[in-house]
Image (cartoon, rainbow, N blue to C red; front, side, top):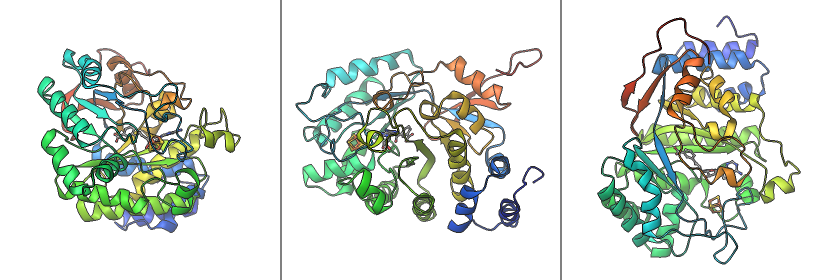
Length: 380
Ligand code: V47
Ligand code: SF4
């Protein structure tokens, strides 16, 4: 703990070294401390103990089948959704989904990440048909699809239980759930930025049901908008509690709020001012330290930039959102980062941090590692 200068952070380090769990007050202390490097060194130590120097990524492909969403006017942070008759609204046919998925024919893509709006015309049959067709055309590709909010929406329009929807989608080919839709669980924050969205406790409820059915999932937190530090800790506590119960979460992914091109950003007068690098790194490090029952913490480079994601590898992160072929959701809200990263680019980024890159599957099993080029390594 040589690099820990703040005595309060050092005390937390000693607590961890003694095998104790952090509580919410410890999380607040970390968020309030200016000792960024001290916090990073604690998170790095915890990550190394679990994952060594290996940093993984998955070769995935995003498909956003519909941007039509009944919550278009109430999720004020979202710039992606459209009302059914609004300009720019779209809903893919099955052929369009398959055409987009055809990029996977090169054999590189191992995962489809499929999320979209809450569309009254995208019910159970729409997704069952889509997953069946994707599995029959691309049997080697894992289907990570539909956030808890979308599952609850399908259940509501079909008048079915969450469980029955999940059972039917699993039979059609659904493998895991992505972590979207969590936003910030606090009721006060949700009222303000996502008034009509599935409540935080129900997001947890859908994931619990999925885990009980053997469907593992990711989880997220949208940060850097109107939430307080206490709200962040409440959110992390709810995730840790469910993980204690089910061990069904694969990874935690904090998502940095982008204020451009959405109503909330205009309301807050925040156009062009995204989260700070310090806050991005703290969110990842505190997540790693508090979520001691999670194996994987992922940084989403599209949202925080490639340089911050590279630094994040020293702040508890062991996984990077991978070679994303096409991404619409963030680029609808002002993310100016490139839309895709090549395999070579990702490997260079990881090596440049002094880490070992490895491609993984959707369950974090290592598929291949990459030997460093001969000669003196050049930091990328
Ligand atoms: O739920 C929407 C977020 C999420 C904005 O599970 C915004 O592996 C920032 O959850 N600024 C969807 N974020 C994406 C998501 C995700 C991404 C990568 C990997 C995984 C995974 C999940 O995007 C939404 C919402 O929280 N979002 N608008 C915005 N203005
Ligand atoms: Fe719809 Fe999701 Fe956007 Fe909310 S965040 S408006 S639920 S697409």
